[in-house]
Amino acid sequence: MTTLVVTINGRTHGPAEVRDDLSMNDFLREFLGMTGTKFGCGAAQCLSCAVIVDEPDGTSHTSPTCVVPAASFNGKTIRTVEGHAKDGKLSPLQKAFIEHFAFQCGYCTAGFLNESQVLLERLAKTPVAREELEGTIAAALDGHLCRCTGYIKYHEAVRDVILADANRYLLASK
Ligand code: FES
Ligand code: FES
Image 1 (tube, protein in one colour):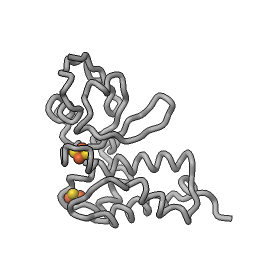
Image 2 (tube, protein in one colour):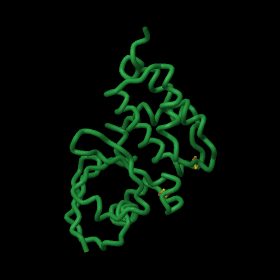
Image 3 (cartoon, protein in one colour):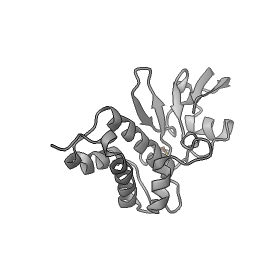
């Protein structure tokens, strides 16, 4: 057993006693009722279960939760799909996903959303040239599987959000 304390979307959860073989996905969904994080393949292959991990050095990345023990998140700070909307307002990415009809069943959406948010935050710190943008988005979303095949629409939605705030996310063109 591990005594788990984890910060999720700015709120501290725990201390909670968890079995060492309990997955983070089960902790979120079954212990906390946070069912926005999905369980797809269960084998670290689809990333529908991905959450954002915020590291102490200010960097962020996504992590699957299906095969990762909850105990390994002890002391960490994470964000889930439930944390994106603020004051009842959807984030720019959430709005763009809807406007582009990027998802159908929505099973993959939380993972795509978290990955795209990490990308936006990275670009805000290290912008790329416009010519590099398509490859940058494709590389960021690579590994996220969508059985409803919304790949192009997700890509276009992320691109729209970036181009709408190009001064922030892209290098000034020469
Ligand atoms: S459910 Fe975790 S990677 Fe597929
Ligand atoms: S919208 Fe159904 S899996 Fe992506």
